[in-house]
Length: 332
Image (cartoon, rainbow, N blue to C red):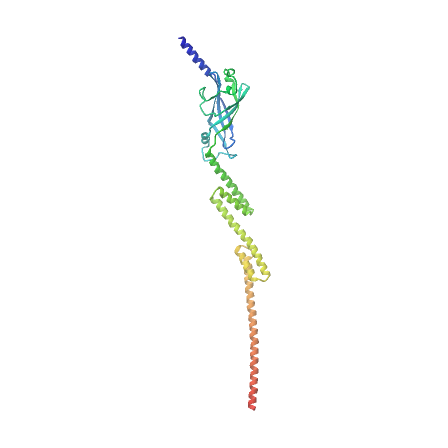
């Protein structure tokens, strides 16, 4: 009977030691990754326990209560709305290694700074779960605090590092970046085109196509621009050739002027004067040729008349000479 009492006292004493624990505290903190990963808020629960005379901290992270805020990718913060993925599930799946820092207080007295490595997600338990021997970590005596675990508290708790990167999210954000860059280049190209900065606009459309190869809209816009560039180049060349035509016309070179005006009209069918000037030159050339024909005819006619006069005169002289001879013969 005495042994049973002693054993019962020992067991009750052991359970008495185990029963000495603080309430369960909840702390929600926000984590912003230094590189790629979720910016998120997450809840931690913890309590202090007297584990056989050692002051221990039991702590867990509640992944199921984590909330995504945004995603940091290549130094840029992105909204997670509109992504074709279950963001909540993707975030919770990728929450991994988590290191936490906090200040340990006894009532209002700060005892020191704690570093808690690899805080896991588990059902917060007692001495046989994941615990941190916090007094030992700070070089303090358990004896001074083991009877006062209910007065211990963590303050200024924050996540010093966390593995929560999602390559699936990053793949989607790459497409978002591409689309954003594409939209910027397309807008830039349209603006440059309206300013008639055609070469720069063409380069912007090509940049858009590098981001979204074979994009039908960018291809169509680029083709429209190249057609307009060709038309504008033809307009400039038409103006130059038209001016050449004017010089030929002023110099009396009607054929050269006509050819220049016709070329200008061909380059730019909507040129204000080229076609009409070419027609005018054709009419002037026709008139000049008609005039030349008339002059030539008049010259030929005059020449013919002159020759006829000579022939007629020659014939009259011959007749008179014959009569005189006949008369001489007859007389003789």
